[in-house]
Length: 566
Picture (cartoon, rainbow, N blue to C red):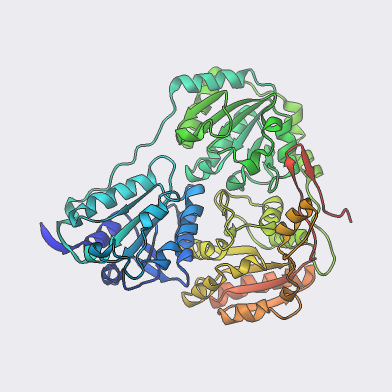
């Protein structure tokens, strides 16, 4: 055995567990770890805000399915991790958060920048630890990687008091073996029950959830759908899991980011096979409407998710990929025949008929036209997109066309303003040969927008399109439901008082402002060419109609459209 410090042992373990990337901000309470990060085969990106460290590590995992670390010092730096951890937790993304702490013998004395991070973080992580016995470090980190990867993935946090980081332990990295991660397989009797339900279905539909993206089985789900000739509805987190023009693509559904085709097909169904989904409130809307007259099969790797929102007729605890493979094999063996074929054959025409209008020609632009131009400008097989929250996210979910699984990576369950840009940076680090794009609101840009500078410094160019409507658009729309409007107008975002072009330039971007669809189209061409050639990010300030509302409702059967017809 060798005598080495806890900090050195930690870095050695991180390397052995496969970590190659860290997003962090060094500080006095974590510098002993940084001493060993300096020469480790781990590429470190110095961020501009601690929250952004977690979002970047989160985006990195979404794109590459490899764990990155988010690391920072103690006190307010560590507490800034909380929003990022919550965002990762609700979307099932494993992030290893490492934070410093004061010396362990001072923890009850209110020393400088001392806060109980495991206690704070326990509700926004799968588990949080504080190291108080140096020799416990290897077992603690091994458990952390196991917890992150097993079952429903998610973030963890490790707090390291300063004296613990410098303490010596007996450790040999050759004796450290990463934990094996079990994968839950479906019970054979549950698969048989599912086959029986599908055999009696008259109008089955498959819901593909984000778990299918994480389990890398979107193609398997499509193969199952093709055999059954059942429409596929994607949740928001699985957007792109089936190509837009696939004859079985029924879009996605919900009361905000949903699409008319998805809601219509779901309402016409009698059996619902949900794979890797959560049945969240923005997806279901009014539960009575959602559930009435339908039989539900729910497949989820996390047992506690089954029955959390409503009790399905059959719950199957399983990895999505293993369950889909077992189900496909079983329905073939049982000789199930497609049903509802006339309806299914009409899906492509129905999808076209129900598509929302986007070809508005006015200037300032309709937000819908911004997304039409984005759809036409980028190859969604090679372009990654992020989205955060607000009315811009809703239009993005409703209107963006994504043709490949895992290319649209939004903050889904948390709806985090500020996720867009640091997550996009993490994606660009993970996939440097791909284009990375976000459409962000003018208000949302100011949450974590400083991370554009990080993209510039490290020559990881991203394209940022600011949908500038000079309002807190979604909050204004919500206030209208209460009969008032207050504190939501931001005219200074368009009148020159706040200049996003100058902001972009200050952060190292090429930047321009556009007012019409043609100007936007030309700017997108320049953005693609420029970012690829120069390595510089590109910001486009797209001036839009100020008071346009988005389609939404309380029930999937009652979505109000606010878009003008002409």
